[in-house]
Image: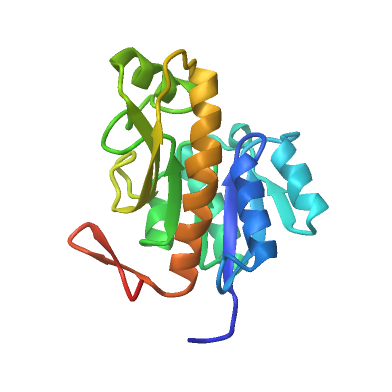
Length: 213
């Protein structure tokens, strides 16, 4: 394996808690050969940009409102990452719609973390607290998080890792969201990134095979 670092771009739209989990993992040496090289925010002023600045990571704002269409925005986003030599893209609370331009530029090289056990509570409209509201309405006893490879169909790409989290009586969407972040998202997202950066992930027949683990 080459000693050349795997350059990671993290795409954000808000506070950047998952970005922070990745930054902390890199500092511990837990991203393997991975290096967070670029943070792109879909709007200005979000706290994730401050997290990047504090850790000397290049950060840029590509605001959706500055582009006429999803296609224009997607082209600009893909061009930005390609010109930066990015190897892996991580969606960390990135809520802006992108099209197949980005997927084609980075085939099987985009990871997303979703705050539920896919295929439950996923797909169009399931993001943020809505995921946890739906889980509680259904009365599930476990929920959790999933890291998957991103494909054009929402939340339908090959699953890399999952981790279950207990749903407790009296949970609110907010308490469940916090527990899933702390017990699942912040653990399996850095682990999935490490697996990718160490060359351990292969995709066969829309399934992820983890090699040598």
